[in-house]
Amino acid sequence: MSEDLFKEATKPFLEAAKLIKLDKKIEEKLLKHNNIIKVDIPLKMDDGTTKVFVGFRAQHNNIRGPYKGGIRYHPNVSEGEVKALSFWMTIKNTIVGVPFGGGKGGIRFNPKEMSQAELERLTREFTKQIVEHIGPNKDVPAPDVNTNPQTMAWIMDEYSKIVGYSAYGVVTGKPIEVGGSLGRTAATGLGAFFVTQEAEKNADFMCKCVAVHGFGNVGLHYARICHENGLHVMAVADSKGIVMNKDGLDIPELIEHKKKTRSVLGFKGGKEISDKEFFGIDVDILCLASLEKTLNKNNVNLVKAKIVLEIANGPTTPEADAVLKRKGIKLIPDVLANAGGVAVSYFEWVQNNIGYYWEEDEVNEKLKKLMTEAYSYVHEVAQEFETDMRTAAYIYAIRKLARVYELRGY
Ligand code: GLU
Image (cartoon, rainbow, N blue to C red; front, side, top):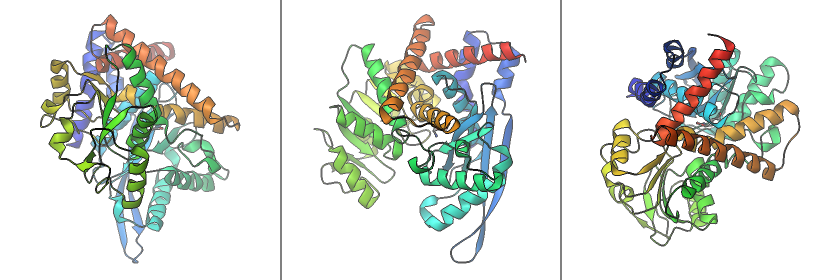
């Protein structure tokens, strides 16, 4: 599945490139990765045995600035997956206008089966193995699936020990006490919320109810922000199950429940429903905030939502995408919808570089500006080419990247 993922990832790119008759030399450059780093990471387990894990860092393109993108811990991590994810980062960073290229990394394992001490040793060992490839002006990792501010603190600390100074700018998404930015944790969810507000301005309906697939850092904050703004979050799915309440779930209580039990299952303020029921719920927004290929040919026909919001990376397969188009369901693509995370990562990196830290309001104001502008630029292109938002997003990004190639020479 994983090599296919990169191939699939290039489909909208190729369509957009064709529409604007992109120079073939630039097309070739954007279809290939600058570096794919693969390392073996030996780890001493708590029981004294040693296991070896495989880790990757894919560096897609750095024509617009240092490689930038998360590191994920998941059993499905593979070369093909990080290739797709780093490619999307190049596109996303260009769309939201942050001066970065695209990177993504990960380690293939299940973090839920490891102790905190093992996680720390594994993270530090991985950092040592890729140390020459990362750096504040070279490649700046961040959290992704199953990694968090603590993971970033370990990477920053290990890197800093090796280079001999506190290099805060080597990663973003750090805890506040060690160079993190206020607003970073909720940024992807908040950015996605700003984007839907813009989408609503162009639609002939008001967004009142949502369903959220995925209740990790991103889906959780998106659901919380929707709830705080008076929207009904009718259903939430996580990897263990799905809960629904047609009058709207009490999200703060659900967050508490999830903290305690690590799942939404068993939540008293809602009833358990099946996957099938979930995708068929009549909501305004179906938010996909879990993993790749969530919406596929098996469930897309059930969808009744007016808008599909991709907060995860690559949650809709190309087949499902085509069905949504046919059904007239608007899709806000990942490379735009989830760019709020990396936007605030950029603000964090700027604050680390200047050593001066901003108030949360200032961060959120700046985030709102970037996201609403990005939405309106993509929307303009969609109208110009009479095309969907995903194709428009790629056209917008490719034009900007091509201009940089023209100016720098290629
Ligand atoms: N992992 C996030 C993403 O996929 C954030 C990346 C970053 O902040 O560098 O966009």
